[in-house]
Length: 373
Image 1 (tube, rainbow, N blue to C red):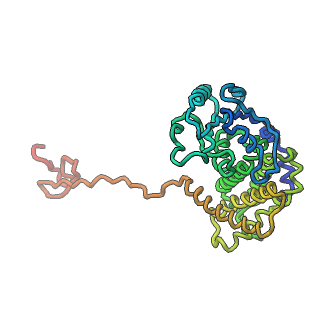
Image 2: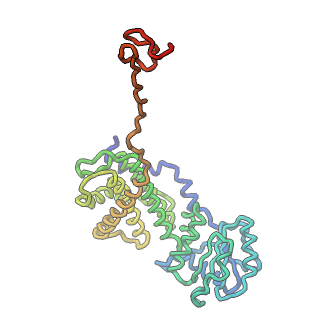
Image 3: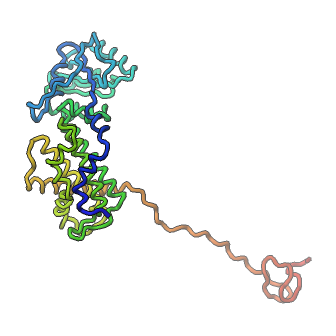
């Protein structure tokens, strides 16, 4: 069984794994075309995508194709086409014709109905709901809340394999993608802990985690840290993350922190808290690192405690849901086959004694059991 010292080598082990596919995926160019009539808000949306809403000073020069509806330039090589409509307009004939052509060609298209804030309530869905697009969203390109809660998730759902590149190139999507990566890793680690049972305990802490499982889960956290860094536009060298986050993951620090929060909250150990520990530890690591990426500062001890407590509650809820979906064989009583009813013996007409039902002669006196025999 591995020793606690193995945690020190987690980053080294990560470095020995081929990280090129992850790095290349993050550096891949996401080709997006924003198309629409003049004045519809194409340039406004492009600038919003290149800017971090929480930190306006974070801005990228990522190339985007901005095309007139009539020209339709840059469509052929695009990973995503964003067709923008002006909600105050009444004629969308050209847009509908163009959309139908792109859909027939297999293009991924989002229809963005812009300037919703300039029309009266009740006019939002007229004429648009029947459009054949993968996503149809209504809002304003100048509204950061709408862009984060509706536009960003729509783009992420259409481009599921390009999240790292999308976040690295367009700051608007970074926090949403980071939370998706954190949740994905939390769920993965929770499922792993359920599959192994995490049966052994660390006596000093009374935690149901064996060292082998802790190493595996911590490796997943190290990959999460690296992916988050790529998403936020930081270095592609994994070594650059060791100085900032080596102590967070190495040495099992997070597991001990979560353990202290769990003491007294769960009176009896079982599979639910075991899965909850795996989920919670990953949740804390992800959010600690996310906080650093967003603010440039490490969180305080009090913030760590608050996040740990929140993580534990989320972990227990998810653990219960996960375990409830596990197939369990029914242990009901097996139905026993019924034996045939006993056959009544046959009386002898001569001596009166009983013989077997299928006998033809009395087994005592030898007389026939039936007349005429």
